[in-house]
Length: 204
Image (cartoon, rainbow, N blue to C red; front, side, top):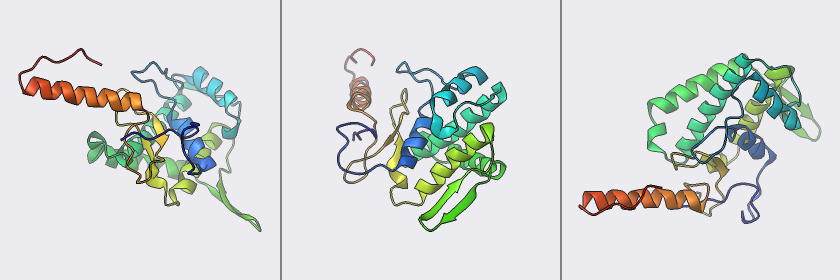
């Protein structure tokens, strides 16, 4: 089943919270088999990305070690989003490892509660790169309290794993696009052909 990514003009009427966009902006920085490049490869590329994303604090002094921490946090979150999509390879021990890592990160970058007459929000009381990690955790924590937490997923097509918000009526979206859904269907078709002794078509 295909789910339309958040922000798409075809996405439908379901409202996407700003915290979803924050989480997706972070998790969709990975390289993949579709040509997207790694945006947190080193301190320089991580700093350039931060400079373009003011919601995360803008420009900061960033080290290669900071970029490595960002990749580990991101990959742990992607594992959770794959689990939301029912990806079997992400369940079990991979999911447990990701959850343990996220607990450690949460203890290193604690959040502050800001209470006003207009409402309550979580923010990071830190500065620099630690504030960035706290901002990601605050967005995740805020959105996870909603009934739509399970709708933020990662595409189950193995070369992709692109993060998306599932806008389908029943929350059963598995892929970020029709292209990814077609690739998976074609692989299954070739597998059935091989099992039946037929000639598989070209790889996708």
